[in-house]
Amino acid sequence: MIFERIPIKRSIDIESANKKLSDDDTYLCWHTATTGPPWEISAQEGEMPQLVCLEGNTPFDFYFAQNTFLIQGEKIGKRLVSAEGDIQDFYGDDVEECDGCMQLLNGKYECYDIIYVTKWDIIGSIDRGDSFRIFASSNYMSIFDFIR
Image (tube, rainbow, N blue to C red; front, top):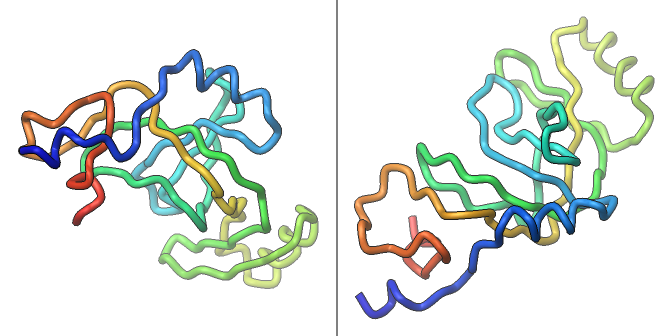
């Protein structure tokens, strides 16, 4: 119980997150269930989200939870993902080139951005999904949140 009360990562409020969103490499991010990449991002609150692949210091997400994250990172390329789960990496910024690769692969792939995450924060009260830790704080993550 003592270790449950030691904060490792504190959550931030949505107002603080919105202030940081003006930076070029900062996005709102959340986990999603699709046949493509498991993450969606938005550069501004209310903007249409897009599916992306995250690499690097990716946010820690709880099973069956609905948390929103503020991530900082840079786009490092594209990833081609098929409906069957096949993956082809394409490290380039040219969308036309990426579309050309998709055509060479018979159009069976969708093209998604790859973002290399350098820093992340969790926004608002923390949803722990299917966790039975009823005494865990909703304002910060403890060491037990990072143990699987």
